[in-house]
Amino acid sequence: MARPVRAPNFCPCRASKGGARHACRPSGATLGTIVAMASKHWIAGVVIAAAAGMGAWVYSGAGQTAAPQSTFVLLDGSKQTTADLKGKVTLVNFWATSCTTCVAEMPEIVATHQKFQSQGFETLAVAMSYDPPSYVVNFADSRKLPFKVALDNTGAVARAWGDVQLTPTTYIVNKRGDIVKRYVGAPDFAELHRLIEKLLAEA
Image (cartoon, rainbow, N blue to C red; front, side):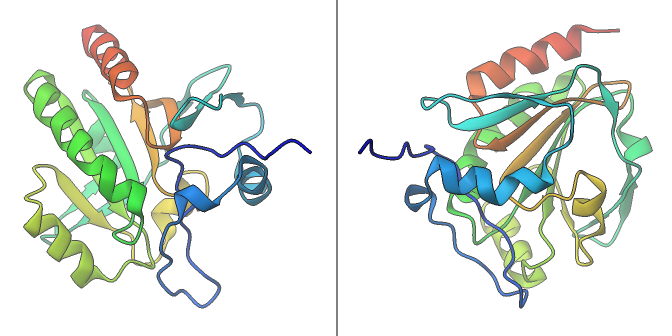
């Protein structure tokens, strides 16, 4: 019998039924298990570009979709809306402090932000509803995250953005406010940088 193919760098973190924090075990999930867990949450019409050697599954629709109208509550208590993102290329990352892949990819997200921020690039990290705010604040402070971090205490933002259940899930939004690409799992950052450069060059 053929052995199941494992999905590398893929972290199927989600809240348990009781809302408890759930630790990631990316090495223990088979590709088949992940498909069963995530299939009901996928948006109809997307094309899955996945291979055993990829760290993330990439979703690209036939046409671009406008980013959902959401209000993000930042750690300092201020608020930012989706409309505020227009005019910039934005990376919106859904993550949790309990997700090992989220934590492992965070230095790359920081490096990406620092590389492109002077060119009109924005990063917004949205902590999942089951992540205790004190954990999120401590993580952001101790890692000195240079970008905006939002708390999604009610889960409303995650629901609006396609009912996000798996972390990390990352969206790339263009200057017009359209979602260009969605990554589930850690993206190929070299490919991501090329995409960001292309979007920044657009009028």
